[in-house]
Structures are given as structure tokens and as C-alpha cells.
Length: 181
Image (cartoon, rainbow, N blue to C red; front, side, top):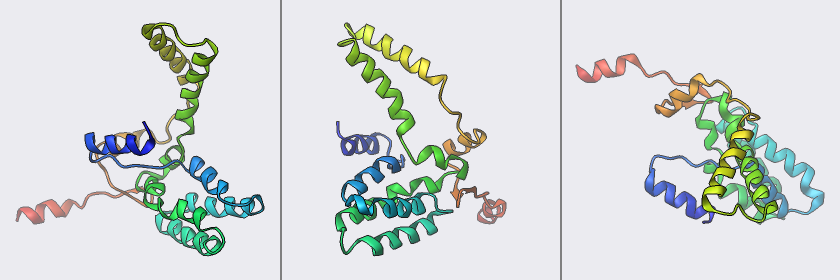
């Protein structure tokens, strides 16, 4: 299944799911569309985007990236501009979580261990043995996972709380009482 097929399936089953693209992989894709001589400045420009203080500043950094590279490298620019919404989705969550949401590498490295072990052992044997092996490898990897920053905010995110500029937006206590009047 391709990533586009994955997201299409997720949107169908869980229509409220929000998509965040991985900046690590996006950066590699952008750099592949640029000559090596442009890499150092392009990396700095992309860091300005994903390390911006909020979505507004990130969009300004995207505009600056577009101005700097669109004339010579439109394909590289399109890789960011065409995906800007899904690249900046993490800004709608607590600022403490941004570092976890920008990249899928921790998830992928866990599955890379499972893939490598499966390859080295020339396959897991039976389906049950494969599931058991994957479970044990992931369980062992779990002990090395970094804890989520500000774990107390996870429940708020799950409950649909709104965050702007990385901070919780408290509901207006007067809004419900005014509507009822």
C-alpha cells in the first residue's frame, strides 16, 4: 500500500484524522531535487520553516524558500508548497509535542528493526512465529522510546482541545450561557 493509499483509507474510516507529513523525509526529497551546492542553504531554509515559532512564521519561511528557489528549482519548491498544509499540521497541537510530530523516524526505526531481523533470519517461519518475533522486537524497542513531552496534554488532544501557536485555547465560559439565554 502506498502512503497515498494509506491516507485515503484512513480518511475513509476515520474522517476526522489529520495528516502530518514527515519533515525528515520531505527534506530528503527536496534535497534530491537540488544540486549539492544548494543543499546547505536549502537545509537552513527548511529548518526556518519547521522550527518557526508558529504556523504564520512557518508560512512566511515557505514564501521565502519559494522566492529563493522557484526560478531555478521549481520541482524542489513544489515539494514543499504543494504539501504545505500537511507539513504544518503539527502547529495545531501543543508546542511541547511538535518535536514528536514533525518526523516519523522513531516509528520507522522500530519497524526497521523488525524488517532487518526478518531478513536476517530468512523469514519468520510460520505466521504465528512472525507475529511473536515482531511483538518481542517491538516490546524490546519500547524500552528505549523517548517519553512524550507534556504527557498530560495527550488527553486534551484526544478530547479535541484546540491549540493555537502551540498553546491551549481555553473555551469561553460565557459562550454556552449566552447561547442558552
